[in-house]
Image (cartoon, rainbow, N blue to C red; front, side, top):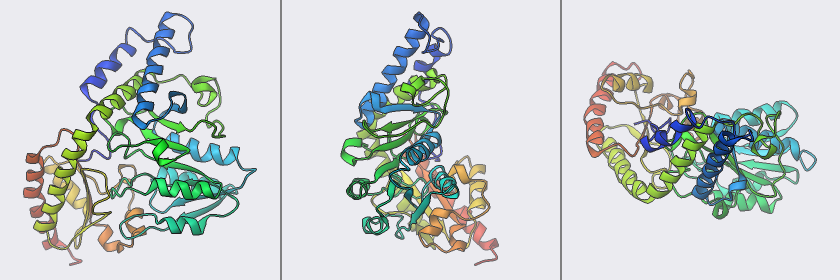
Amino acid sequence: MDHSATTPVDEAVLEAMIPYYTSQYGNPSSAYSKGRAAKRAMEKAREQVAALINAQSREIFFTSGGTEADNQAIISYMISNSHRGRHMITSAIEHHAVLNTCEYLHKNGFELTVLPVTPTGMVEPDTLKQALKPETTLVSIMHANNEVGTIQPIKELAAIAHEAGAAFHTDAVQTVGKIPVDVKELGVDMLSASSHKLYGPKGVGCLFIKKGTQIGKLLHGGSQESKMRSGTENVPGIVGFGKAAELAQSRMSKHFAYLNELGKKLQNGIREKIPHTIITGDPDNRIPGHVSVCFEYVEGESILLMLDGYGIMASGGSACTSESLGPSHVLIAMGIPEETAYGSLRLTLGQDNSEEDVDYVLEVLPEIVNRLRTRSPIR
């Protein structure tokens, strides 16, 4: 129950990848037949990923994952357009792939504004309007938060940024493949996605760059990815990403409804069975199957360890910050008291989860929380 951290590779995805590790191992930059076969497979994957988000295939640039895509979108765009302005805007609840990248630029002479959020983790459009300046060059707001699941009003936020002359990037790692994502409908200039969040392999992602967007390289070297991203392409990973995108598109409506109902059952069950529980994130406008809570008078780390003993995999928030000793920056930005934020738990469901899984968690979790609370010195 930690599918926001990663997903298992779908069997059909693995099957599609295997030939490109073995018989079709060519370098796509090579002129001979194996190279051309690898190139064709890569371009098919580009079309599959583009179709998932309603983009043109030439607007998809493959990367090593969401973090690299975020870095390229922010660093390369700000440097390439520094003559237009050196101010950028992001939100307080972004993934660290965005926050730390913005901080890096800030330390190197760029101006940064970090927007606050509502108690449900929403960026209010008026807040963005007030933060924009004539020298604002880029706004980067995530499509949905990885820790609390809140989906942002990206279409409205992007329109506000464009009206002020700024470009708009969204980290959509948590939404692509889970909910409908249409870059034309959203009106974004750049969008980051990652394969391993939608039953594809780890180590591959992409950056959508709208045609006409002026942006430079992040990695320098060869002329791969239309001279936008140097380095020999991860052909098996890209093929897997393409297949995962194709499967996600065909299954989305069915899985959306299924996970939405399963998530509601889990969330309502936790609320009913465990007192002093705070549901975090927007109660309705959230990723399907995403349940985020804080338990008062208990530490989340202890809950995770005990759940693991029962064979239940969960997290306290972002897997990328699991070794951090402090409370979640997302929960703190939402106004949740620090002592309560330490009791956070995230349960994110996937296509193979069942009602029996939910029933099992609702049987085990209340007992764990109650046992820990009887020992807690902060109650």
